[in-house]
Length: 466
Image (cartoon, rainbow, N blue to C red; front, side, top):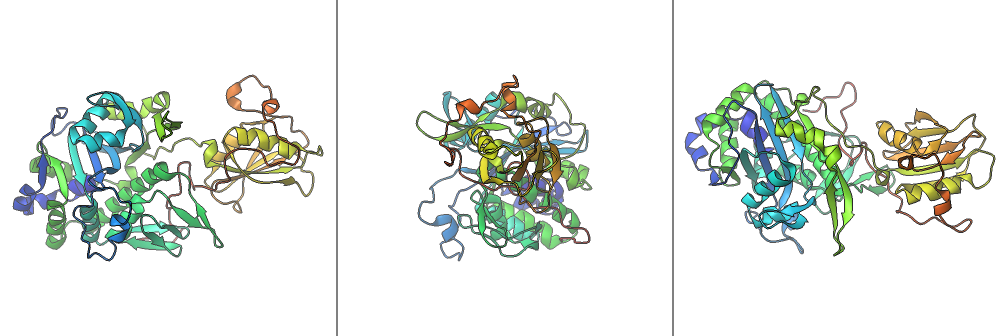
C-alpha cells in the first residue's frame, strides 16, 4: 500500500522535502533501471511490533502472548510500474513459499530470508523467480495504520459480517464500512477469517492465500480513496509524509525525483485497471512436518514473465487462481434410482481432496445430472463437473453459500473419476469404506466467494462506498 501512496501522493515529497529526507534508507544491491523504464518494487508489510505503544488500547492484539519478537514479513509483493504502458501490476508472494534461501541455498520458507536480512530476501526472489528487484519499500504496523488514518480510512463493501479474533478484525453487519487504521491493519493481516451466514460463524480455510487476495483488494480501495482526495490539501499531503518518516524504509537509490515523475505520470491512473496476480502454489509437508507451499512453476511462468519484462498482459483484469478441491464443499443427492451411488461418489471426491456436505437421496428423480454452484463460483462448479461422466448440466443456485457445490445425480450418470487420470476409468475400487460409514478425507469446509478465500464483493447496484 505504501507504494500506492508514493505514486499517487508523490507530490507530497516536493512540499515536504525536508521530511522526505528523514525517511529511513537502506543500502541494497538492486537491479539497475532507468527512471522512465518499467521498474519492480519489492513492497513489504513488516510485522515488527517495536513501535507499538503498550498504552494503545488495541496493542494486545499485536503484543499479546505468543507474538513473535523482531520482524517478519506480514505481506510480500512485487509491484511493477510501467510508465511506457500506463500500467501497474501486483504479484503477491506467499510467506510460506518453500524455496532455497540465499546465499546458502538451504530450503526454508521465503519469510526466513526476510528474517535473515533484506538483501537475503531480494537475492532469494531474484534467484528463484528470476524477477529483477529495482527498488525496495517496507512499512511497519504503526506506519500502515498512520497512512490509512491520514487519508481518512478506506471504504470497503462487506456482503456479510466477518471477523478474525486473532487479527482483531470485527465487521458486525453487511454493507459499506470505512476501515480506520486499526481495522484496516486487522483486515490486511487476517489469516483466520470467519464469516457469518446469519446463524453461525464459518471458518475460511484459505489462510495466507486468501489474505493475499484481500490485501490486493485493500490496496485497490486505498488507491481509489487517494485519487478521490485530489492531493490538494496541504494537511493531507504533509500528513502522508509525516506518517512515512518514522515507520517506512526505502532503498537509498529511490529519489524524490523518481517519485515525482511516477506520481505525475499516474496521477489519473484508474485503480480498476491495476492487474493483480497470486503465485500458484501447491501444499507440501516437509520431512519435519511443516506445512508449506511449493511453487507451481509451469502455471506461474506466464505471470512471472510479466514481471520479468518478457511479456505484457493484454487485458487489465484481475487474475484469479484456479479452483482447488480443498476449496470446495460438495453436497451429493442420488437421483439415479440405483442405491448407494451418492455414497460411491463421495468416496471418490473425498479421496480427491474435496470437502463433503450432505449425502442423501434426491426427493425425486431428475431428468439428468446437474452440478449447481453459488453465484461467482463457476470455477468450482466446473471443477466438480469435470469428475462426472457423462458431462452434467452446470447451473447457478443463489441459495448455495460461497464455496458450496451440489451434485444431483440423474439416471444417465455413468462414472466418477479424477479427470487427471485421463483414461476414462473409474477410481472407486481404490476407495474402501464400510457400507453406511463416513468416508475418510478432509473435514467439511465452506469457503470463498472466489478460489483462494473470501474477499469483499462489489457493492450492489445503486450503492456507492466512499
